[in-house]
Image (cartoon, rainbow, N blue to C red; front, side):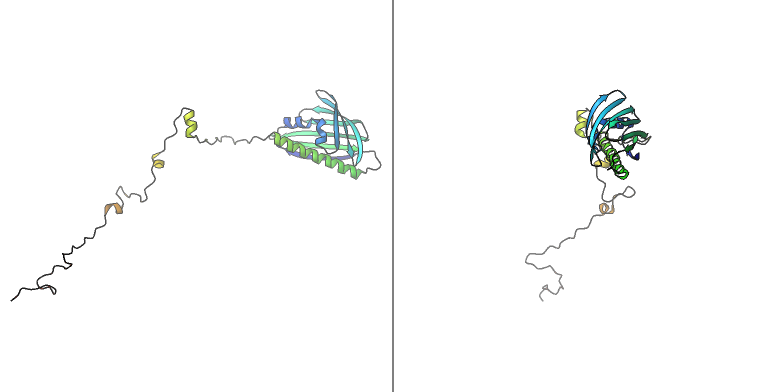
Length: 228
């Protein structure tokens, strides 16, 4: 008997993962080994499926009976088929809201053209494809809920004015600090800034006399003194 096993962590609850894996009639879309699957019988804790496919390139048929142990284990075994022996088991273990899935396979081809190494490669591909497919489907259909740390409060959501009007509530008024922008120059000790205390002096312009001449004193160089 050739034995191979593999494991995956699936970010989904164990009950949902069990429901997904227990659809053994969907194996042709998962394993890559079986091409068709016909459900022969289904009971509450057991089902029988007829598989057809290729094992290491050779066509084979396998009638398998599976026993369900929800939500932690599924056992399946070939009861009639082209392989000498074929059986396996799914084990599901919950881990902090996630699920660890373990798949174990055992097979004995009983065909001279198929070596143990070839059988091992077939089983390994079966396990890897199955686990990866289960993980992708479960995590896509069942998104994980992110838990908030204990004691943490959710951040308040902003309320728009339109939403507040529809709810009959008035939007919060702006605080004075938000309504008026801060002054460019802060006040010091309750006094106005220096620029506001002292105003610049205006320069007075001298008026010019008619004719364009300035008035000068009696002894000025440009004035005309009294005649003698």
